[in-house]
Length: 197
Image 1 (cartoon, rainbow, N blue to C red):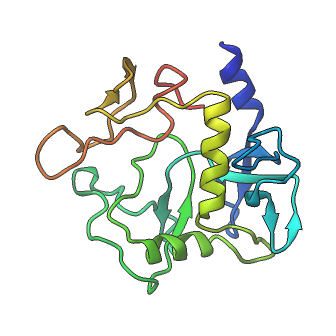
Image 2 (cartoon, one colour):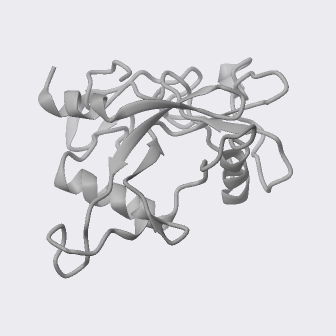
Image 3 (cartoon, rainbow, N blue to C red):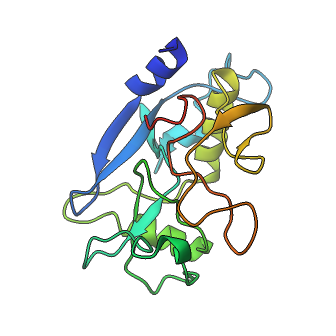
């Protein structure tokens, strides 16, 4: 196993939602950064300032989310993979709950408000802190990847543009034409030879 993958595995944790469902997250430790001095800055990156308090780390869902129905605990769309994730989820008038787990067809056809609500719905029963990523969190993750290892992924019709040997497992019902996009199952490509990590 390469050392980069081993380092990533050490930062991978499971945190449960309000229903006890597991979510694989990546622990991003606090770092300093500013546009002039980069990582040599004395300023904490804004992603690590939560409600005015500096935190030691943030936890980011490791996989693009799926959503599940809190009444049946069934992942939405998994009864008919060829027609999965239809219809489009729009607005905040739903009870779906986001989940970050491997080997799933990631949720698409969801607007910003619906995605934010699905993340907020993870909170409750003494569990809090789940939310849709902020711009500051996205920028911190991008800076960390740039300084460490940029992930490879499905950005060119089922493989990675910079390395076409990087492939994942295609989600059921996905292809390179027709009505379905060409999605990989979460966690099946990139650093680890199509094995979830």
